[in-house]
Length: 215
Length: 215
DNA sequence: GCCTTGATGATACAGCCGTACCAACAACGT
DNA sequence: ACGTTGTTGGTACGGCTGTATCATCAAGGC
Image (cartoon, rainbow over all chains, first blue to last red; front, top):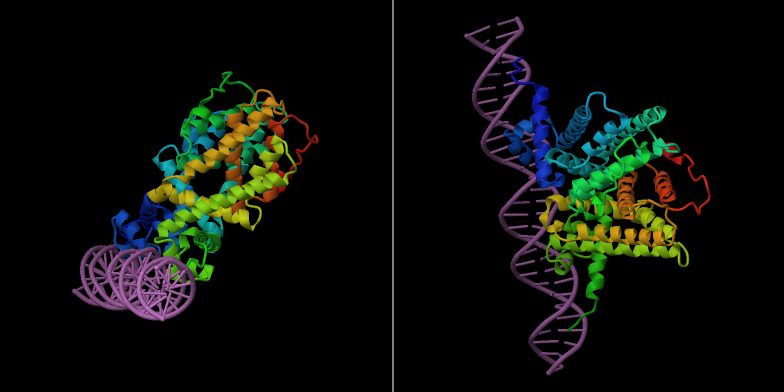
């Protein structure tokens, strides 16, 4: 059997082309022909690897989630060797903010998928409860560890704060995306709440008023 | 001139038909014919009142924002005669949560518009910075008043908390929409943060652990 | 060496989309 | 009373969509 190209690799290439087009023109406007052109292949090839558009979209979503997970892990690693819980949480939260092109793509396309999943039953199947739930429990676990190390202020409800931080990160991300807020001011807001949650082993007075000014 | 029907009223009817279809099938799947059928009029009529689809979408967005504003005001009014700042803020924040059909529609369609506005320049023009900015400054103003009445804990950054609460409300709303979280647990999270911000003139121990359990 | 099988490409086909055009009706001013 | 004008409906037209069909080429097993 002549297998000249790696099947999985080709699928990945096409999925990334899909994400590029979706980031540029919006997920709703993505057509099979656009994806093929962006990937530099023929329309037939896209159909060959993904028989139907629905399967292509599904794989694109999975690929997006996979890529984001890698990015988040890389961000945490970049926070230093064996970073503390706070640094890890900060890395996770800011990785989700649309600051550069890749994270903008992630946030925009992922939100598009989320919106789609509300009305399209095919998308609603799995990923939109699994992924955020995993992020939530991971964050809660980090906070729990931090609390056991006495890094967390007493009386803090770690599960509730995990939910709050993720919801804030998502909400702030969207407002960055639509141009209402700057990435810096969003990061300041998140930092402020981390300051509130964690014991003050950080420079005092990080309450600079960059929020009201930031766009 | 035979003006048998009120022009503005007809436009409103059609816009509401648009919102109903968008809530049911998703904004991306809305066509002129669907809107016409939903409104019980002919396709030509929709074209007559809104020459182009883009104008229809624009008006639909404006109408949605208008309806939400009315709803929020009604909610605040329902909070009692001359409600305190905290009750008003709570009413505002929970009005934005997708709890019933109307608020689900609002949240879904508004988010769809927001996502669209990132890639479509026509939508990006006005409303997506104006409306949230207005909500933000209104919320900040309420907090400022509350602080002057000594209802707010000392050391609270009201602008920052206004931003945080709105971002949380938006993020929680989305997670409700996709079925990750229950409206009750989202309301509990918001309440918790209001407890944190305001002085404790409320029943103590509202920290029931409904968050981890709620779906 | 041939033929099966994987891989790629060009083209065709319904179906839907937004928009435009044309026809008809009803009502007010004169 | 008439015709102008606001108002409504039926229908047609390109263009684009996802999908299916047909054709071609390359490569490895027998």
